[in-house]
Length: 210
Image (cartoon, rainbow, N blue to C red; front, side, top):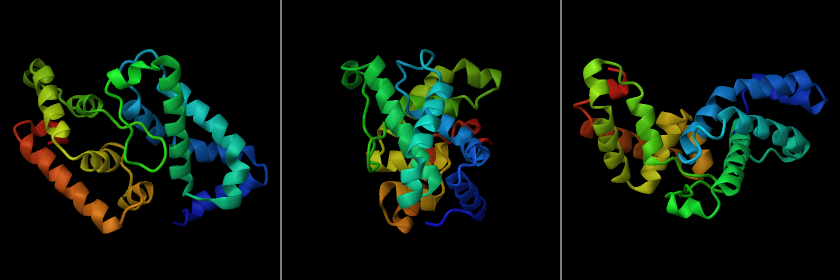
């Protein structure tokens, strides 16, 4: 997949040693990478490990690996950064959780290469964070459990595609590239998973912004 013209120009400048271009590239994807870390960081570590620190470690590692990336460009730049971020999350899990990872229900996603799966608890927290009315807030814990039940009832691949599209906001092309799947398959599975989620949680319209 070809990079956008703007990203391609920044990569060309970065290849010539332009540090400003590299900073601009990292800044372009900062918000998306933080969201990914927030979803996939083991919940035992949330509050103990700063999302921004993991993203910063990603940038430092990416800067070191950039010459190799530019020589081969095995993935679009954002997906390459995202892959490195996944490696950094795994490193953090090993350092801080270690043998407890299995007991904590940590899974590895069906993504090619290391990438912790987003837990149903993290996804539910993202959705219920949108509930703001007093009546919704009063039963937020109950709603969160219901969301987790629905997510846990999905096939792991459907839940992963839903995570990538709806929560990480990857494009369908990016999802297909990430999972090594056909674009039409990822699209149809995403629509099916999203419809199921909305249908089973229709009594809580605030979860989906109205």
